[in-house]
Image (cartoon, rainbow, N blue to C red; front, side):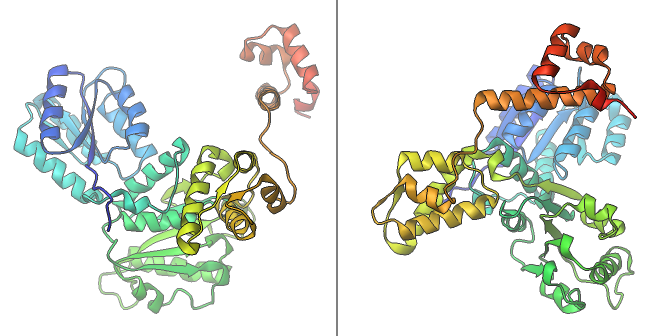
Length: 429
């Protein structure tokens, strides 16, 4: 039985008029929306990262950060997030201009209740929000604020047809995120088709591939490995879709494109191994998946999830000894979540008792010890990096660098000596 609860649509409301802000909040909550009221644009922008709204309703004229400024910032951080602006009668021309800049629409004050609700319903429908449960992201286990930001971005873009490029190290969950975007999109009932670009044949991007994904999503997995002739073929297909006349014989069907790669695409562009025109057609919205070492708070959560999954498979419940969990949480994971899952599976298969000992984890990791640096080591590493950056900015000018660091020149020299940095090494030759 599926007991996952449906969630309410989240609406961020921004207005520096306390009375109107309270009225809008009451009206929207009465319609079963989850509402976060904010009194200015700066507060709203900070709240958006935490609240992850499906829609923003903002006053046009506000101090500090006005509605136009808020709209621009939201578009940069969360492409696809719909914004409705509130305007007094005299500022309607400004609101019209704002819609040309990407605002979903505007409402004039005093805001009429039915018009408000109609606009909200329309905006949510177009954004792709439906009263679905959070199961669209069920495969991505996290409590990390960094990952939540990526998932928020993914959910916003899911309601659009914008092409998405997902980058990140091997094993970070790029394919899982692509599937989550598809599941959260209006295309969820249509096919999700994966094309492996690292093993691409010359005729990979034929009519049959695009027809198989008709109305759904086509994932181009490891786009960085695509041979040059296949890149040209893909570009031609995308140009046919974008530029071809309606009803053209070879125009690809209605397909949403998501691409993934663990390669450095900028390096491929610089070396001529990746077509620049193809890159820009695929990279409309870019989501970079963080490595596991940047979200260590997720490791115990992931371990518990993998153990529960294995218990379902085998009928045997196993847990890690406390020291083993500590080692898992502090070790380096070059293979990221995929490597962690493999280690947990291996440990469960080899453990002779219900409690998995730390020695078994050490064996799986090749005898490696914890890689998490101590506080002092981390502080020294940051300080040396900071000093190096300042010296690079100032071209090795110690007086100028000391002023930027807000330290006197003598202390600054001592810091450079302690971290073995020579100013002359940063001067232009």
